[in-house]
Image (cartoon, rainbow, N blue to C red; front, top):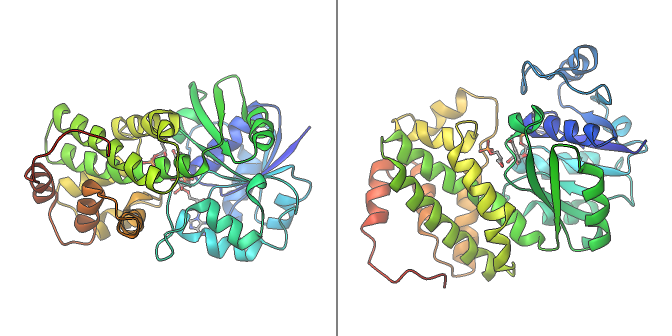
Length: 334
Ligand SMILES: NC(=O)c1ccc[n+]([C@@H]2O[C@H](COP(=O)([O-])OP(=O)(O)OC[C@H]3O[C@@H](n4cnc5c(N)ncnc54)[C@H](O)[C@@H]3O)[C@@H](O)[C@H]2O)c1
Ligand SMILES: O=P(O)(O)OC[C@H](O)CO
């Protein structure tokens, strides 16, 4: 049986471990809290992130990164984007030197504006043929419940992507390969920011026209940034683009949409963040995505406005009416 290591015992790390186990692999999860690892091993459940769901027997958890990585034929990384650099500095010595490193993360590093695959390359020295990304419409709870979903395994090396595709193709999870790592990562990170805006519209009591308008124009600005950075524009109409954007902006399970909804209802960033242990990546990544847009001279009005709301410089209501009142133009991708 193939062993896969999953670093991160949160919602998605645990749900993706379930996919891997259901696809026939032995999975070792590294968890930050020893007490949670003990509960996963003894009760086959992750009560903090996926309460009430029984995990497959092929999943075990450990607080020891060397034990998690030992003998693994692939290493999956599922920690918050902004902690990845610090985490990899600690783990670099124990990660196997020749196996694929798979990012499940949907964020852009604050300060450096690096995508997660770039942080992985910098910290581990791995080449593009070893670094992959899994991204798509994959709300963790639904996946862990065994509800059907598709996703994308992106890697510059087709052979690596195909091997990883086989590792995670389960009876309910259908992965497609893609060689556009940049597009898949930017699709995943930017949809979180658009979901914040959609959530704000919902929190303000606006209806489906407002949501659909933000989703559609959000996809346009995501593709605009992506193509400026070298992504394939077709990626944005695929699972890691439109697919993930629609799932996230439609689902009450989305942490980013929910965060936006609470902003729209008048709560502050500090109040909302203080009330949850889960990460809403868009709250930090909105500023790095806006920075990326500035560096590449790309117009991203929704991301810009969300960044201002998160920084406390604008209210959600002012944001939506400011977006509407921008100078009128032609509908186009360029
Ligand atoms: N939850 C989903 O539905 C989902 C789906 C696809 C992708 N993702 C992405 O996966 C990544 C992980 O998200 P998640 O949903 O598992 O988040 P989560 O909030 O559910 O869990 C985060 C995990 O990281 C750990 N953690 C927090 N701070 C840490 C630190 N400084 N060092 C190490 N570990 C730390 C937490 O203890 C927890 O185990 C994010 O980038 C997210 O966007 C999530
Ligand atoms: O709960 P969110 O908002 O982090 O979104 C989860 C996934 O990324 C959906 O694909």
